[in-house]
Length: 99
Image (cartoon, rainbow, N blue to C red; front, side, top):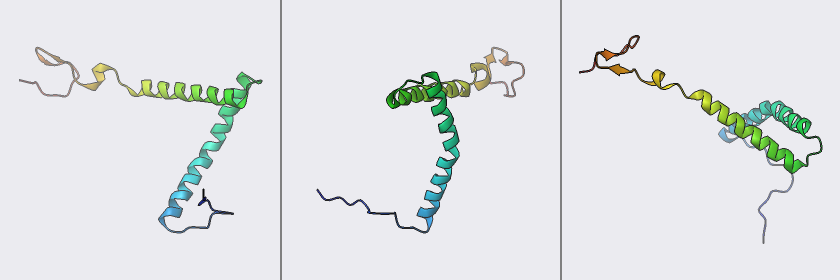
């Protein structure tokens, strides 16, 4: 089976493709300190953990963070839409009386 993989360094590209690659490199570079901190935290929780166990711990931390972020994004029902009463909108609502 033939391989189309490049041997040696990847040639320098130019144009929009290079701009996208530069942006991705910058985004990854900005996240590196946070990744190192999270790995250190996972290792501190269980110093004898194998790399696979550390990965599982990091996955759990990631899912927990996503769940917490998702929960914080939802607003209580009374803030989503004005509550209508039989006398029109509730106090403090800026909507006009519905017929």
